[in-house]
Length: 426
Image 1 (cartoon, one colour):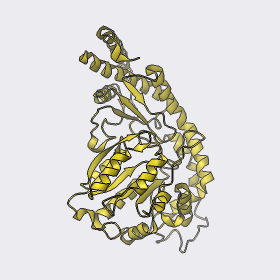
Image 2 (image 1 turned 120 degrees about the vertical axis):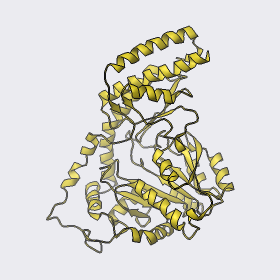
Image 3 (image 1 turned 180 degrees about the vertical axis):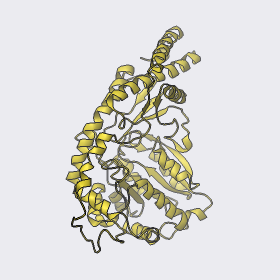
Image 4 (image 1 turned 180 degrees about the horizontal axis):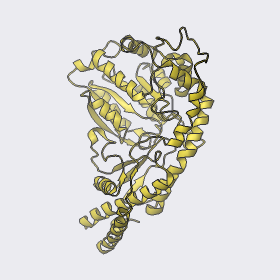
């Protein structure tokens, strides 16, 4: 239905009908949370076998030293190989740490701020530091950067990734721009995969700042919802081919492969970048949790093992995405003027857009009805969505029956907020 073409009288009748539906929803005392992209219990259960793989009499491998002891700051070599294969780099280009890739990103920015990048002026000694933030994007990237006092610049996106005409002009003219955040595959929240052209342009574009870095958070590199994957061009080899071997910092983890709270994360980059990082990391830690790393290596074994468990994850969460997408299509069709949404092939989110100026009202209506969604604006730097239109939906943690109820609340709230706005404009 194209609501804007309808008469005021028609809209008022539709609004009255939806408000009556909303009153019935309020009587149900719903409590559903679809605000964060967390694995559900069934997904966590997939990795429980890992906990039985070593015991007090197990023979643990030695990599130059007993893995129970200090040392091995780079992480277990076998796991570096596995992450390397996953990301398309050599094992020597990978460091494996603790459970959190976000922690590794924070540490990387902290090093840049305090010590500079490969001998450059420390960023905290500069008058201003800026980061490019393709949006809608990952809220924790934005808050992590802002806490250091770095200025955030919103970059618009389309189905191919960040709008590169905008990016290229900014980085060529402004030496204060030191980085760009990227979730290149099944992006949070839009689900897009960066095109080959975008990857190439990021790799080769001239930058006024010699210490400019791409923060490539490949969080969903193996997180396909279907048997086929959407290919992503290798950013590291693209940077090498274009004479910028040090340009990219790559991050990934097993957070949504095994246990989010007890997984392993990695940082991959050029040999020069890793050497620079290790100069200060050696004061930060004497070594990561190599026993947990060994557990992961023994459990996952190789990329065939990774692909096998990811198919099991997909089988659990794909019906949840289907539930939401089917309800939205049934309620709005494919050409609604008050709601549209992404149809991701992987990742953890659906990006839902309502009529400009209505997202905050939709959020409040959902909240009052017992449905928690991501705070409107969180998918943009400084929490500011100028269009007040984007809503992030995270289906994975909730069961399918709850999602059906959640969709009814979301649809009803959308219709109320948007129809009220259209009536006010008549």
